[in-house]
Length: 357
Ligand code: NAD
Ligand code: ZN
Figure 1: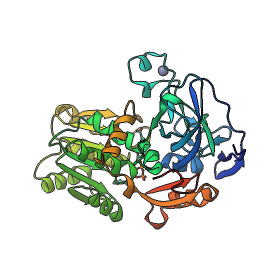
Figure 2: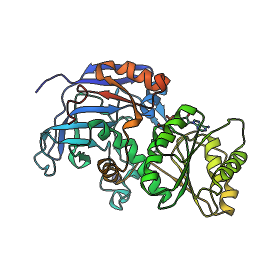
Figure 3: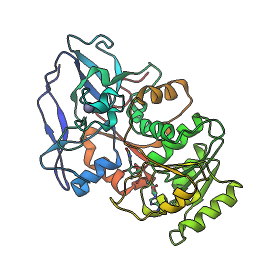
């Protein structure tokens, strides 16, 4: 096996370097993966630019990347469900497995979560990476490694739609047509939503949303009030959405979600904005609009994989750019500045299609 373990390490704000790291040793329940594809997420860019997200602060060098897929090259002695050569998607957060949240199945809430590229834990934009085997999902031959990497954001969409209880005939409002808004749109459609209106400030993103199956799009006017925008949405739909899913996290979009949602409906917040925001809580209270948060995902990876493998969801149009790991800086610039109308930027650790049929 090669000893080249080129790795993208974030040393501090605006200081992302490619350097060699030792190839990790594995323990009995792990696999060693030859990494294939790693998507760039908004949070990766955020750590590069700000060095922190909320209370997660970069205090020492950290390997970046967490939307990833790889191929098993070495097996721990106790690993039963995988074999060398398997192509897998990597669920990047590994919980403690022992606390009440873990034991009751809400492991995304585990306080001891070890999550790739969330300080202080290393991510997986590297050639060789160790991961617990039970957080690796074997990809069928017809699912590409890039699609495997995209199961990460797709799982956020699955979790959001499950939290919103999207179902047959749901009328869904989605704020934000970035990667998270778009995977939420795809999932809502697959879960049976009949009407999906998506909003953004950028027309090009709404055009993509339309191609992906949004029934309605609305270019928001930043100066309009949330109440007024809600009434525009009600007129456009001829009804009130029973679910709204905020995939922006701007105060204005969260307010819009509350005002727009039907009485007795559900307003889910995925976007992470300012830690404190002004919301019309009495309006929500008096109309029994439930407000629910979403934190990553929990037991959602297998559903995300099933959606892709069955063809119910096509995530491929989200990938707008491809780079080799040696071009990591350029890839981050593209994601950061949205060059070329970038939506999802994919980094290839191995030459593209090495592991695709
Ligand atoms: P993104 O920045 O690519 O997309 C956000 C979209 O919202 C953009 O298209 C932008 O034009 C649009 N937008 C911004 N302000 C707006 C406004 N006032 N009104 C309407 N549209 C507006 O980000 P993304 O990768 O799609 O992620 C979306 C959000 O979800 C981010 O806040 C991210 O931190 C969060 N997120 C949360 C979780 C979670 O577990 N809760 C997981 C992943 C991402
Ligand atoms: Zn736990």
